[in-house]
Length: 226
Figure 1 (tube, rainbow, N blue to C red):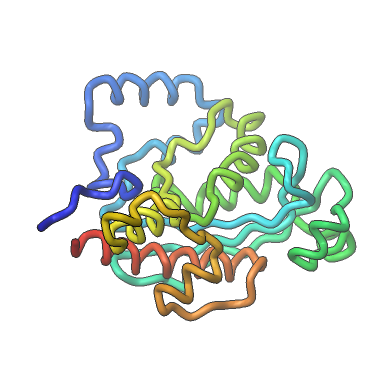
Figure 2: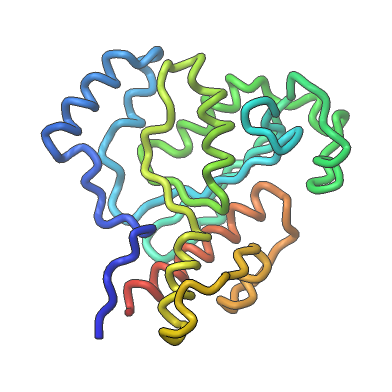
C-alpha cells in the first residue's frame, strides 16, 4: 500500500505560484538591499538542488563565524562534483579549541580567507534560487542568514531539505508498527552506512556537502518508491 508523501521532501517547485506568495515575493524584492541578487527569488530550475555545509569557529550560530563553506550542485539523480564551491573565510573572532578538534582548521589556516561579504556573494550566486539540502541544515542556514542579512536585509528564501528528517521518515516506514516512534540514530556516519553509501572524511565542508547530497538522492528515491 502506498505511504503518504514525506513531509520532509518538497514536491515539485511552485514556490511563488500561489497568489499570496507572489505578493510576498514582490514585497521581499522591494526590500532587497542589493538588487543584483533578485535572482534568489526566481523559480528554481526543475530537479536541481544545492547541498551546502559550513565549518565554524564554534557551535553557537548566534555568535560564531563561518570559516569554511562547501557546496555542490545536484541535477536530477546526479551529484555534480565537478560543479562544487569550496571557500575559506576569515573570521572576526578566534577559532575555539573545541572547533579545531572537529574540523582541524586553525586561525593560520583561514587568515588569508575571504571576507564574509565576498564569500556570501559567491555562495548566493552558486546557489541561485535552488532549494538547499544539508545535514542539520538549520545550523548552517542560521549562520548564512546572519551573514547575509546586513547585506541584503532578507534571509535565505530558498526551500530547505533536511536529510536527517528524510532518513527519520524512511526508517519509521521500514519499522514494524510496534516499533513506530522508536529512537533513530541520526548520526551522519550511521545514515551513510545504513544507506550503503560511500563516506568521505567528515567535517570537511565539501565532503560533508557531497555526503549529504548522496544521502538526499538515495532517500528521495526510497521515499518516492514507497
